[in-house]
Image (cartoon, rainbow, N blue to C red; front, side, top):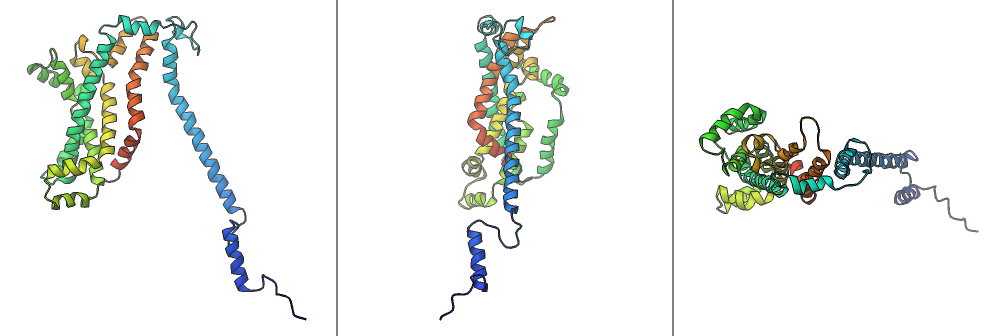
Length: 316
């Protein structure tokens, strides 16, 4: 009689096969405690769920003020001070007030705000990108000191330079007529924050790309315009969003330099408050309308905005 085959677990090769089969089958590997991977996966799963829950709750909380503004805009003046979700009764008084009784008109206010915000944003994109490239790539005496001076301007409050700036603009005739628009644009033509963001982004671009253009005979400006600037699209998008939002919400300099017919949206928000009361429905309607352009801007450029902010902090 011939002896039957020995036990499968008696040889070393059989042990290796068993380990291999276990690994391919997703079982417990040698030296691993049974259930360890499963417990780890469960913990990560619950952490992810908790993180999503926290973000959803935070997003809802951030949306509450905007929702409350929409609700209040459809209330009566008497009902606007009540903490009720459904207006009693629902009325369009606040919206009718905006379109019929504002002076200057709602269209004029939006045109003023949009024109100033667009001009300031374009000037910052051009000047901040040029300055950022110069500070990141060009070598000239006093470069680091000059960059520190640019950053130091961020610590000077607008109220401190109000008198000299106003006297200067008055001297050259920019405090009358359409020159008031130009005065506001010149005040915010280039911001130190934008110069910093562009410099940081240009520093994150490999020098080899720029050197290849220089070898091909490109000048500094050609290299900047045709090579570096297209690569800086995320940073430019971040600067555009931040600056447009900041200028759209600007209050101090437009209030100081502009006459009533040139007022912007933030100044118009003060029209609804008197010494003894606040006209809440039209005020909330104005807030809703003023929020829409910024919301649309973020929706379309959010991806570039995140990329630009993240890349701007890569290298110092």
